Image (cartoon, rainbow, N blue to C red):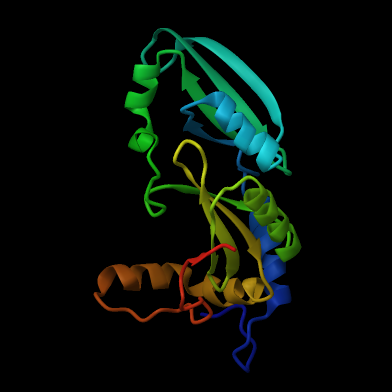
Length: 211
């Protein structure tokens, strides 16, 4: 059943927008509160997110009890704010050996398929502004056109892969077309060995090193 397609097969974007608003209004979870990651060096992390990317540091909590181990401890928890009030958060333990031991990948650059955080800006002009900040700071990044959005990827000082993405002209139409069949598509892929792509708008060159 394709509840969004008109007789010619094109997506009904207005119907998609209305349905999306109604669906989102029913969801009791309204936004991401924070995404947390371990920091190797909190000052280095602060400089990257606050000074380079422009995410203000809005909270630093000093904690002396570990709720995971139920033991006394010594760590801090920082929050860097995004435009909707949600935050990227980081922990650093005073015991460096322990901090390094429990870090994902021991602060080596991780595989983006295993973990990355994707953040949204509004339009290509805003994305170009982020790219300029990265260039000026000497941070390498790659561009990629996903078809349904356009993104850049780079690593933070802790080895976490960060994606900054913007929606594009085709975004709503692609999701309007894909949404009704999303569950069927997922289950079909799981049950078959060789399913054709349903994303013909993805760029064929993959990641392109930023200039």
